[in-house]
Amino acid sequence: MDRQITFEQISKNEIARSSRAEQFDKLPADQQEKQLRISSSVVRYLSYGIPVMILLYFAVTTVVLWTTFKVAVGADVSFKQAYAIVFYASLPTVIHAILGTISMFAGVNPEGFNVNNPVATNPAYFMDPTTNKFLYGMASGLDVIVAWTIVLMGIGFSCNSKVKRTTAIMIIAGWYVFWKLGTSALAAR
Image 1 (cartoon, rainbow, N blue to C red):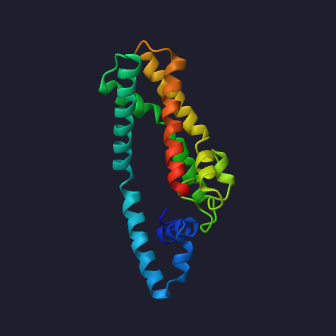
Image 2 (cartoon, rainbow, N blue to C red; image 1 turned 180 degrees about the vertical axis):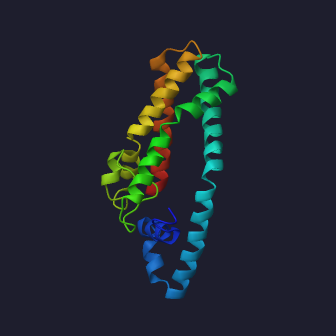
Image 3 (tube, helix red, strand yellow; image 1 turned 120 degrees about the vertical axis):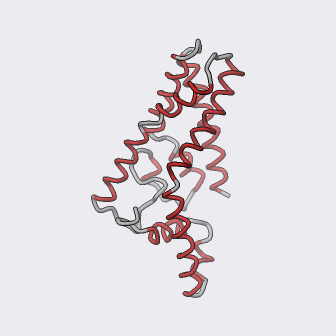
């Protein structure tokens, strides 16, 4: 990302899509430069910390799903098995990352690059992220890769317990919809 788009350009794009874009434009040039430098540094460190954040995200997801399957449907799945299911079911996201990398090297417009939605695997890719943030967030949830991951997690939990496959998929999809509703509502504020 740094070589093809630059962290400074990613910061500019994110500021332009944020609710504070007007405030940023009103700042004097030296303060804008200072904020861009700080923002670029934050984006740089966050991008290099993604592997650790992914493992943390998988751990939190595992705790939620493992607890739900244990309590709600009495599944006999160990935490270790649940973590492995979440981890391996998330492997299709590697395809998403590869497609994003290909699009960057294919010459995507740096000023239009959206680091949060770099590939057209959901309807939100074709929408303006600044008009209706709630609708944009919900449309980004209709992602082909995410649906694939949800089905794989459902199959994994089903195969490792006595829970029916459709029940397992519906539990995971329910949590995902709940999460997308929450994050989309927060983005719309």
